[in-house]
Length: 223
Image 1 (cartoon, rainbow, N blue to C red):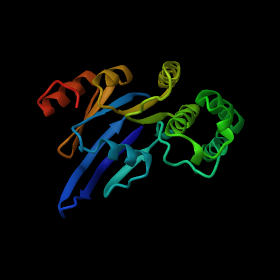
Image 2 (image 1 turned 135 degrees about the vertical axis):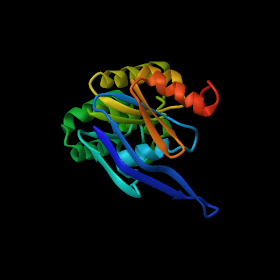
Image 3 (image 1 turned 180 degrees about the vertical axis):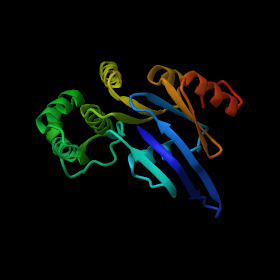
C-alpha cells in the first residue's frame, strides 16, 4: 500500500512563476493492484513516480509505503559506468538483500549481453544498458513496480520475452504505470488515477479513469 496524506508539490517555472503538481493530495494505491496514471503532458505523472520512488521529496505532507517498491523499471541512469554489468548486478543484489548468485544468473541469461556482461558499462550501447536495466528490474521480486513508458529493446524475440517476464511479475505484484497508450493501460492495469489541475482522483476501474481523462482532454485520442 502507498498512501499520500495531504501531499503538496510545487515547482518554480523559468519565468518566476509557480506550477502546482499536487495540492493537499490524499490518495491510496492499494497493494496488489496495477494502477495506471493518466493526465495531460506536464500534469505530474513522472513526478509522482519519482516521489513514490523517493528521489523527489514532497513540499508538504507524508507519503507512506508498506511492502517493497521498485525503482523505475528499465531505468539505466544509476549504473556505475566504471563497473561491469556483473559488478552492478552484485551491488544491486546487496542493496536489496536478494541472493547474489540467483540475480547474477537471471540477469546474465535475460539481458543476453554475452561476454559484455563482464565489461565496464561505459562501453555499453544504449540498447545494452537498457537490456541490463530491464533484467535487473524484473530479476528482483517487488510488491509494487514503477513503470514509466518502458519499452523493451532488441529483436522481436527479446521484446516478447520481456513482455512475458513483466506480465508474469504482475501476476504476483502490483504496479503504477505511466504510458501514453490507452491500449497498454487496459492490458496492464485494473485501476486508474487521473491527474488534473493539481488533483488526483482514484478510479477502481481503469476504463472509468480513461473515460475521465478523455473528458478532461476533450478528445478520445491518446496524448
